[in-house]
Image 1: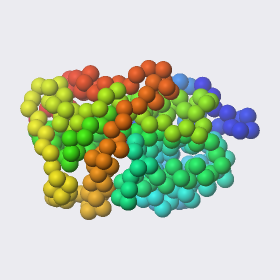
Image 2: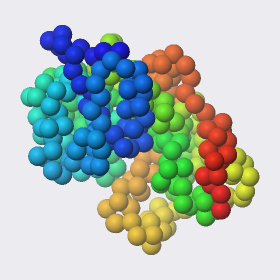
Image 3: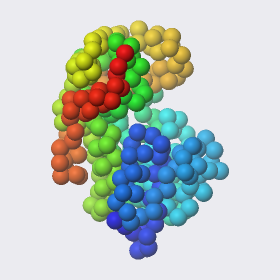
Length: 285
């Protein structure tokens, strides 16, 4: 595997968010494949990169021809970063975004992702957007892990299904898009194979874990109150509340075939994934 710049010379692949859910999986895939040199960048990664410290941007970009762009929640630095990246020789951006992001209306959810989409579209470089649904890994790595372990997940999803996706599938798509031709100018909506409500996902996880885990439908106000009681900053609580507003509106419900179109196979299903994760004791009380 090699990547070629528009001038025909090999160039590094810069992966932002390289310690995150998709970033660390993408780095591993790219390095396993061999060929291009991969620069794994984050605040605590091999290559230092901090959205709030612009002095870290140029060193991270040095020698990079392609960038996997995971935007910050704050949209303000994104356009300037993309401008500097193209000036330094970046000719391809692959942006991690959100399924339904283009339909979000006025809330704070996805402002950074929307800014990244707009910035790369206007950059003059090649770009591809990966608009992904909520990851399976939100259930076992951070966001909803503690509630599931405690035996009760309460969310304001309104009973609207979402086709959750495995972060490994997102990383596989990103690796293909970064290293293969034919993806420029495309916006891929990356979903899992079937829609599930959070109640159904919780039941699947409980069955895999072999223990009772209750799902409770909350109002948006009660969910926000719970987040604040848990110590979430108000802005973060509002952001995740806005995410569920997009979900309840049905903007994240579509099941797509874009994973199959890129990879030539179906995306992973939640149930076998849950069994594998449960076998490690992840959701034990």
